[in-house]
Image (tube, rainbow, N blue to C red; front, side):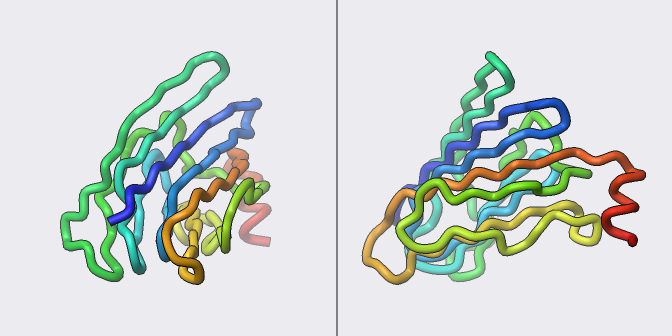
Length: 156
């Protein structure tokens, strides 16, 4: 099992905020962000392990350790129990920017947050091609939208 460390920074600028995710990845795993929670979906090779979540709001810094629990097993397709520590809900937030800061292979958005999927963002980390784990870092920028703007954006 390869330990995986997750570092999430939330920076607020009015209605826009950033989530920075830094993780050690071995194989393929998906990270889902929804509401105030995160959870892993395991696909192959090493499981995500000890996770550090650091939340930054202005000068306030909050750091939490999360060791994912796998209540229904650890094989391919296993899903971790949720980490419910994000201080700001991602509900009614749309993704306005995605940057890959560092990756050895692929880090990409697999699902954009929309009303039809409960504003769940899914990020895929794929390190299958090269032996062993490596560090990956992505930055997601979100913006909360009013109900009127959400209707205009998703129902036009």
